[in-house]
Length: 179
Ligand code: 5GP
Ligand code: MG
Image 1 (tube, rainbow, N blue to C red):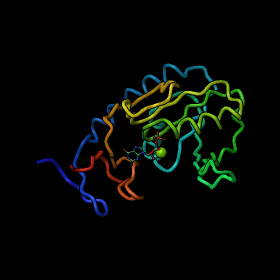
Image 2 (cartoon, rainbow, N blue to C red):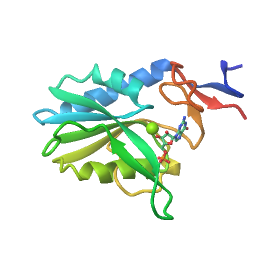
Image 3 (tube, rainbow, N blue to C red):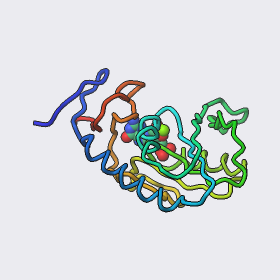
Image 4 (cartoon, helix red, strand yellow):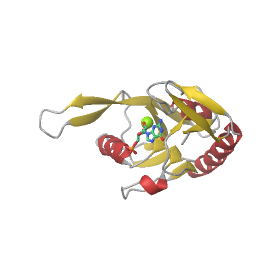
């Protein structure tokens, strides 16, 4: 029987052990260190979910670079279009820089599309996306996800920064909702 955890009212079971996550990050860092050499780099991590991934990945980055943390703030739009998400917290001048967006998970890609649109407004030289987890089968957009830690099936996961209603981010492994 696999290891189970309770988060609020739901039971989750072990899905991806810590060691596999760390191994995937080793590989990501190796690729990034190669690809980013000689570039003027800023990592932009998306709070809250990406804080653990960003901390683990960034300590393996050996090229000179900056890192900053931003947040998507939901607010009610004035029109019937409903919710709009605004990127807050960019105080650095990222014009002409190479941006690497750090996300915990890309699912449909809707969130990442918001982020990309708004980042382009700051006129960086180029934007790469690095995500720890990628639900390939749920992705409905057509922009490239350049760096993927692990591809996962279309299931709800918690742990390693990812939450269920705010809880579970501190789990070292990834857990999936029990059937
Ligand atoms: P997207 O806009 O790509 O459909 O969804 C992205 C956001 O949904 C992520 O930033 C994350 O907050 C949330 N999300 C998507 N899939 C999962 C999941 O399996 N577990 C958790 N905890 N959050 C998820
Ligand atoms: Mg997120």
